[in-house]
Length: 434
Image (cartoon, rainbow, N blue to C red; front, side, top):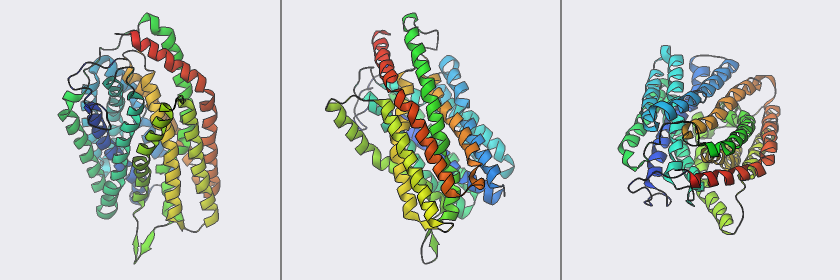
């Protein structure tokens, strides 16, 4: 698809990308700060403050995260057909901010979760759907844009447990939720201030161009297959904020001497820290391979990521088995997050970029919402998988997660050729569409 003409659209100010990417990057960073800040507190708040059982808190955690990623399907349709992307982002972000502040009051806890999920439905698909419109269909920077954008997710995700987590554990959980709300407001302010750098609103969705329908039908079928594979992957990956956090509380030695210990929520910042550290060199590696003539095989890249994540859970299984009910060194947990993050960078930003690139004409937000639907289905599955935590030893549970991640790699490997064919078809259609 073509970039929409806009003054200054191709000025190089961030990793050599258009300035609009910086605005979307920072908006997303603060939105993710609010999400991950709240998520870092959620399970601990339910178990330690509300005194819910691990099984109940795991189910609520899975239900909330799945709901937060189901609503974007409806929100994407509203954005494409009625509201437009900018209006959807402003309305959705405002609703989310209100939900975070509701969670500072215990009687409004469940209502606050619901409100955040509803606002997320409008906000989440509309923001990344704008990334692709910053570039012409043949712009060589476009394949790397979503990896750069993904760094914004993880800067917010890195800062959130440190800020919200520390405030929540030291001063009270409700204050931590309030800090998350402030982050959401900051994201909205940046988005409004940087509006002149963003692409113009596309035309409202209508029936696709007739000549592109067979291509789009094949692309949709391919995206469904990719989505099912990623759903299986996420049933393992999403345990990071659930059962892995619970095991950290009982299975990791957090003491650092003189009666001091590392706050539980800080370990969740490791994932985002490693995304920030690994993204630049990983992009440089892929770019060198592309310049050397190697074809970008995105499905194979995603397959590799799933296997690496499987290996990270296998490492955690070995650590839990070796600890035999005691506490393992925190360095092993650092190693787990490093390996898990490396695999994540192979699969998640790649998948988001594939969904945006293969989106039918004028249905960008809806198609991106379909990517987030894999988070819905994966989170729901992860919540159910997490209920098995209390029924088996940690080593066995983590081995099961490793098997789930490896299982998801099989269909991803098989989808390599169909995906390359669909990308070529999408480029041909984009070259002739107005």
